[in-house]
Image (cartoon, rainbow over all chains, first blue to last red; front, side, top):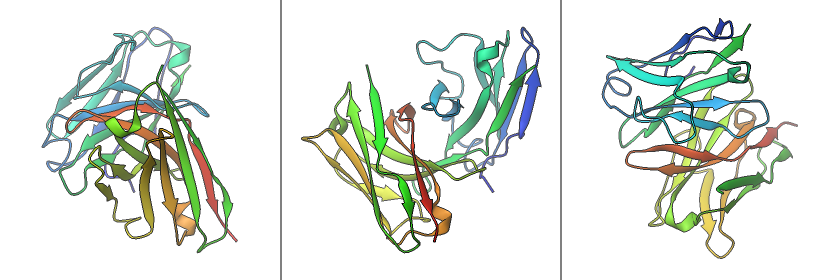
Length: 111
Length: 118
């Protein structure tokens, strides 16, 4: 069982918006503003989509946004496109002993 | 262009050893914190080990004492020596660069599959 809880799957039609939640505790998500999100396509290198809760690396479309409230972080993808179909994982810093914890992953299906 | 290419995965019997390699290009391994992250079949990601720029290392409890992370500066390559392998070590192993403080994983390789089975 992963430390952070994500829905196993979400779906949306092209052009719609979807939000993926990532729930942790006050020892990880709620305790630090260091949540990151990763996109995994089968057979490809994982890609950083969001870091420090809401910052986007260069090259990531502004359709991707991140936020946090309490112990829950969220990734929102607006204007869904077919190429967004992938698995998404959240990650949070969890202190100097554990370092990082990940979510179990969410499969996004673009209908 | 930053690129990470893992190799060395395969089928290994329980109790055996395997060494994974991660060849880097586009940046210098020794000037960056480097990590290994794994994904067991049907499971989420799990951080495994980190090698800091200063040379110190740290590993998750699940692999502590069995796995060793290291680097060869002349080859710009990161390694993961895995000993006393168990069935629950079966996973795709990714190397990733860790950036910032406390940071995030900004570049990843495509992964190499390790299967521990008799």
